Length: 229
Image (cartoon, rainbow, N blue to C red):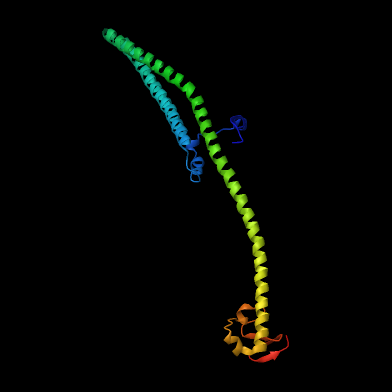
């Protein structure tokens, strides 16, 4: 491959490269050329990373919702404690339990956020690897196609020249046949021509004659009536 990773990186500076497996146009590329085993492997790893990122985001949202709910319940419990001094111990125990759960939520949120910190970079790198492999595959395909296109174009050029030559040659032979037939027909007559089984139709083969017209000694005639050519 003529382009290396450095060139690819330079070309990508400042560009927002989409997650390739989510891009319909990227998927459509492989209707032209099947995915290699390496591309399939990188794509599978990228799919797992993106799914993990989404799952972690949802987990953070769920834990934050739970934390918000627990905080709201603590406010209610404190109000109950002020209104029911006799149940103060029980309410305080519930508040302590809520505080414990809130601390657990904070730990889970922190853990998920730490996990999220590395995921965007991993996803970017894996997406980049997938892009490079895609470029390698289709650069080679374009290169191979270009070689074949050039060869076909050369062949067409040669055939076009030969075709012109053969068309001219065919026309020359048709004119020659018409002339020979006309002279022989005039000299020997139709009976002698038939003996030699010379199958020739001047009306069909000669482009200058219209249907129903014949030629003899340079004279074109119709229905046995001669007119000067």
